[in-house]
Amino acid sequence: MIAAIQTVLSESPHTDFWKCYYRLRFKGYIFNHKHVYRVYCRLGLNLKRRIKKTLPEREKKPLSVVNKPNVQWAMDVMHDALYCGKRFRTLNIIDEGTRECLAIEVDTSLPADRVIRVLERLKQERGLPQQIRVDNGPELISVNLLNYCEYNGITLCHIQPGKPQQNGFIERFNGSFRREFLNAYLFESLSQVGEMAWFWQQDDNLNRTHESLNNLPSEIYRKLLENSNQVCLR
Image (cartoon, rainbow, N blue to C red; front, side):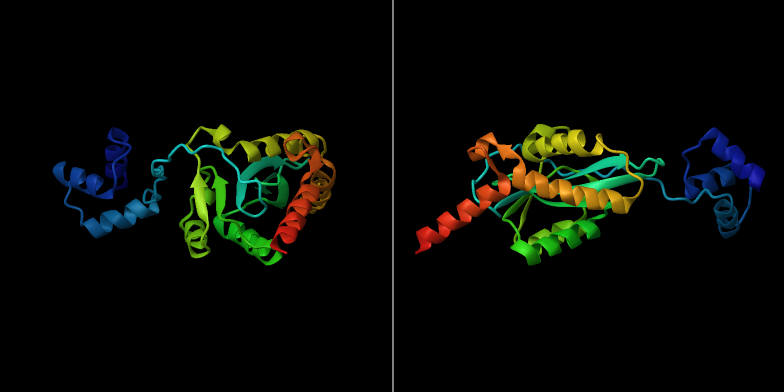
């Protein structure tokens, strides 16, 4: 039977189980389908095939920003490697209105549930925004993340595939992060990356000036906005 199955698959490598079984029957073999399936599984032929996920059509949206904190955020995932070659990823989250870096999460894997945990932490620290701009990475199109954003009243704004300029603020941040941090050091462990990334984040928020923010650092600019809002409320 093994030889018969392998012959069928050599003729048509992409044949699934039932196609394979009926081809055997057509060739005159009278094997029971349960028996064929057991052999088929033992040969490791029943492994699930990866099917490319079809994305819903994304609309082009202007990169317009409200100059207020906690209204529009952006997220993206970056890749790099330790000195030993072990791969790791970083989840970067910024506030588009103030250019403030809110989080740099580091790990070997950052699935949707981990993204949600980071958002929950930020929710406790400063609340959640009205919108988050993201690309179409697997962790950012997850049903779990979509449901979380819907439950919390967040519009998850996906850019069009292959159009990173539609997420320009996080792309600019990623460029600085790559140039000044990831490419600047050799890392020995994930804990070292996480600790150094935290210090880099603090320096970026407190010391990097932005021409679009009247040449102020992002955290200083946010505090000025918050103070002016408090004055207006009085």
